[in-house]
Image (cartoon, rainbow, N blue to C red; front, side, top):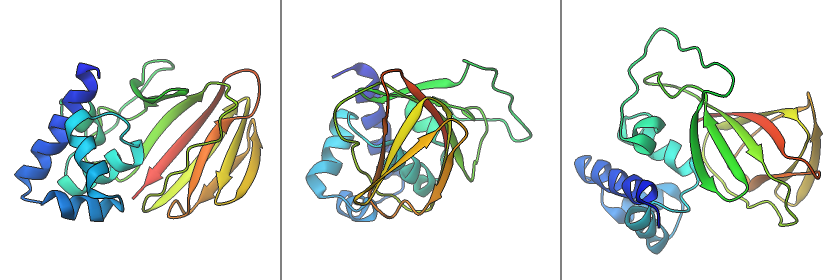
Length: 183
């Protein structure tokens, strides 16, 4: 377990305790079992980005603060030059760049996602709100419930993430897409 992941778990636990929310309530709010939630706090590993976004919203902090321990401070605008998004590594084969890491009190979370080629099926997740994906490079297979939707450069999908969904690279080269999550 890396120190970075462990620190994320400690920040999640500290925020939950500061907000006086029992573990059981937080697990139920995320729609997961208590053991899974306890693992989030103890290791910080394998916490879906959507769960971190939800917890940030519930605790009244920005996703960036949970991931880095540093609060976002900007409230007018933030320019993020190509390649300078804050890197967020959550799962093997998924590489995220937070495209608004310095902007505080966001109502949406934009991320640049790079997917490595893989023969594994997309890991399905659910979360509240709405989600938008726009493919920038390569081919992305979006699994929505039991359906695979193939998106190529310039294609997009806007969907209800309460339904099981996931993305995977659909070719031999890495694929890139922008996702915007609103909860």
